Image 1: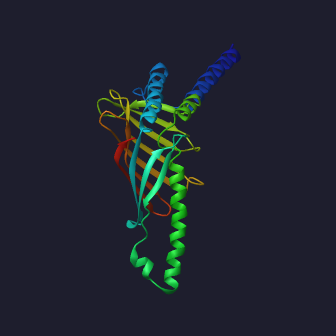
Image 2: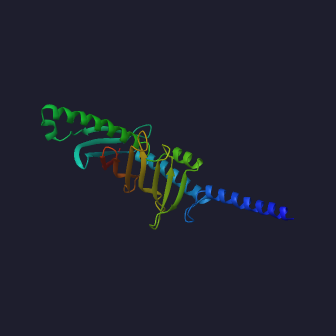
Length: 245
C-alpha cells in the first residue's frame, strides 16, 4: 500500500508538473485584448478599409518633402511630385532634388573628399531605409492576412475612446513589430509605428507615421519620421497639396 500511495503521489506530482510546463509555454494575453471572432472581425474591417483607401488615393497626385538630417544637423532637402503607380506603390518625380549644404560643397582638399565619400555612404544608407519602409507603409491586406494566419496579430485598446490598435509581429522580417491605430467610426488608420532593421537587428530602423483624412476623400500619410539608428540618420517626410486628377 505504501508503494502504491508513493506511486500515486508521484503520478499526481508529474501531472501538476506537466500542467505547469504547458502553462509556462503559453503566452499570457491581457484580458482586454480581443481574440477569436472579435479579432477576425476587426482584421477584415482593416483589410477592406486599406483596399478601398488605396483605390481612392490612386485618383490623386500630391507633393512630398523629404528632409534628411545626420546627427541632428539638416543636410539635404528633396521635393517630389507623387502618384500611385499601377502596382499601388508611389511613383515619384523629383521637383527640386536639393543638395547638401553649400559650406560642405565649397570645402577643398582632403576634407572635401572625405565629406563626399560620407555623402555617398549616407545616400546609399538612406535609400536602403526608404526602400525598406515602403514594404510597411501603407500596410498591405495580403500581408495582414498572412500575419493573421501565422498567429502574429493581436488587437486591443489604445486608451483613447473610439480607437483600437492592431499589433503585428514578423510582418516583413523575423522579429519586427508594427502597431496600427485605427479609428472605429471612420475605419481609418490614424497612426503607425514600426520597429524593424536592415540586415540584422543591430541595424535598427524606427518609423512613426501620422495619417489624416482629406475632406470627402481618402486618408493619407501626413507626416513620417524615419530613424536609421546606427548612423543617426533621420528622414522627415511631409505630404501636402493633394489634387484630384
